[in-house]
Image (tube, rainbow, N blue to C red):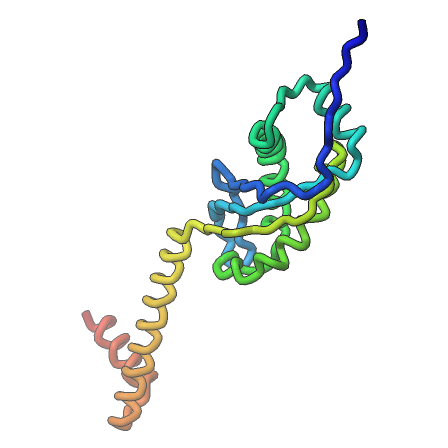
Length: 187
């Protein structure tokens, strides 16, 4: 008696597989010099490009699968860390401010996709599509920077107002400063 198992491999692309960072990615904002915590999420689709390699890799690793969801869960777990690593490398290589970075999600997705395709090709797969759905930057440090800048602007405007007032009175700022210094010396 001879037993055999027959596997049918579907060559259509998978449904969208969701991914997201379970822990924040630490990124240095090179414009402001602050460390920011970034969470990223998105979706990707895979297609079996090399069925023999795909089955060899799965069967060789004793991956138990019977339905699509089991396979989806296996690949989601297998690639989450690798995707996070690629996204982290990309974000840390940026020379621009992180606030407003979500305006470049399509561009970032296109730049990261080839790296993801290289990773999944080890399993006989190809990455059909890869997209970032959201980039969430922790803004607490940026809020502090904004407040400091607003205070600086308010002080500058106050000084400009003082100077304008002195100009209207016909006084010179340096004369007023001289009087203040003389008062301090007298005391």
